[in-house]
Image 1 (cartoon, rainbow, N blue to C red):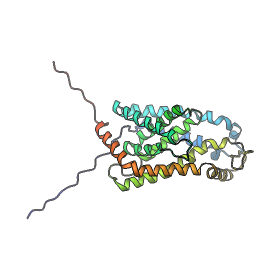
Image 2 (spheres, rainbow, N blue to C red):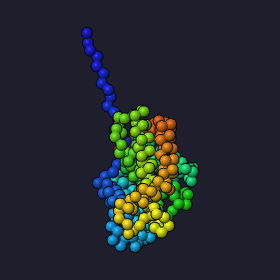
Image 3 (cartoon, rainbow, N blue to C red):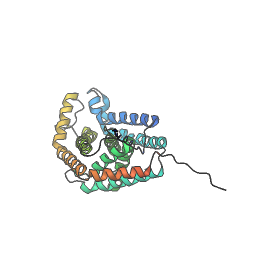
Image 4 (cartoon, rainbow, N blue to C red):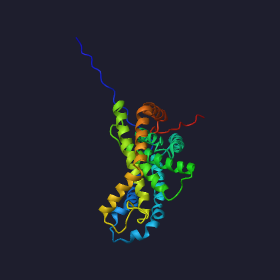
Amino acid sequence: MSLRTTTRPPAQRQARAVRLGPRSIAALALVSALGVAGFGWPFLAPPTSRIGAHAQDAPWLFAGVLVLLVAVVAAAISESGLGPKAVAMLGVLAATGAALRPIGAGTAGIEPMFFLMVLSGRVLGPGFGFVLGSVTMFASALLTGGVGPWLPFQMLAMGWFAMGAGLLPGPDRLRGRAELVMLAGYGFLAAFAYGTVMNMAGWPFMSALASNVAFDPQAPVAANLARFVAYCLATSLGWDLGRAVVTVVLTLTLGPAVLRALRRATRRAAFETPVTFDAAEK
């Protein structure tokens, strides 16, 4: 009697349309550090600091983040050798996300573009996710006329949002219901995180005399933190909840089909396959 054994084929390695190299990682770390300072300066500067006196200049100062964002995108593209197929996929997904954003604008946080950023970052990796999130937000701002000093903050926050999906565990092996639940859970939490981060970009510029939840440059950090929490609960909780719920619902319902389509397109594109040219026959 002979024993017949079968071996399970190894899981296919996740393709990466944009792989972060040393230069792009360094640029990303720099722009993220500056972004953290730009978002969180009210909690980083002591009450005796003179920064509060120049609070109205901060949006324009930190708008310089946009220059570093462009540097990150350029470094990622140059190091990865981004080919025409990856550029085409980036363009299609960015255009789709930009078109989805105005659908729910002004309607209880119904923003379907977020689920697409989660699924795209998951399939195509953190490098592509960061580039896609930033480019999509820039394109949607041009489409909706939302260009202003807040745009660099939106680009950075959306880049973080999509990049985080690419950093989730099990990109090569985790599939099916477990993957969908993980992506839905990430989308739910990240939607709140995005809203909270964007609140930090605008909250310090409210007049402290206009509301008791506004930033007070003379108050200690703990007091301002309590004001900020109250501000989020009073102004954006409903919007963030709507964004989170829509992201979860779309991920669980449309996620399987979108993931299959993205993975099929990635396999056919063969981003990491080197291009060779045969010598012409004479």
